[in-house]
Amino acid sequence: DPSTIKWVPVANFLPVSGSNEFLVRELHERLSNNTKTRQKSDALFAESRRRFAFRWSETTCATNSVVDTEFKYLHALRLGPQAIKLGWQYGSLTSSICRAVGYNERVPGDKPNTVVALKKTRFDSLPSVLQIDMQRGYTNAETGKFTINDLPVNCPYTMDFHEGGYSHLLTKNAAPRKYVLAAAIVGRRRSPGENYVDWWGYYKGLSASGQWVWFEVRPLEDGEALPWARPQHFRVDDVVVIDHLSTSGNTGTFPIRLYYRDAAEWDTDKALGLAE
Image (cartoon, rainbow, N blue to C red; front, top):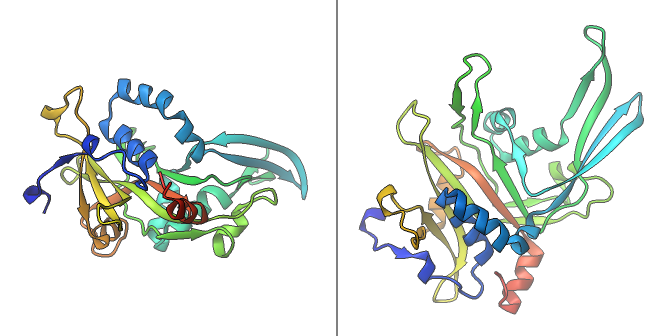
């Protein structure tokens, strides 16, 4: 129970060798929800952000011939309301990702019920850290009102782009990677029907005893937003994180942002004591 735990400022906890430090700082930035702090962080941690960068391919095809291919550099895979809904319906984040990446969008023609081309989106490269942004807030097309999509989604602990449903999401230029969940931000409506969301984070860090464990990071309360204040953390069991990132026994929590690290790179960093 967090109410019975003595809170420890994360500023006093970092840096710790082997602690996924750049991800903890990323969580601080997101949870602080402070524009000035975020702008400063963008400049200060630009080197860490390079870990999130990947190349994105959008190819338009007509009658089996390529019309045009556009490349973009992105720092997060964004999943919209439809992708999140599919993940909830089919029970896995994999369905959401396949909807956002592997979906072949039809390009309509001038005449009714005609399709002149297909637009295919794929990863043209994969990042060291795959950041998944689940866009929970959107404007309802029917009511015109801002709405929160609070559907839970089962989030896998690992994602392997060498095989299964993930491999076809890559172009021939993209080298496949295997990812392991390293951090997450989750949220919950403050009350049913309300669009105000309480949110907090989790990250895998190195404990004082040398074990890799999960830590929870909570933003400070409104009255505690001092200039030198930082979010606060405490250790939690694996099952706590799993519960918040699944649909089984869920208590209204939903994932907002996920961070998956390249498994091979992380293992190498751990062996060298450099997993920051």
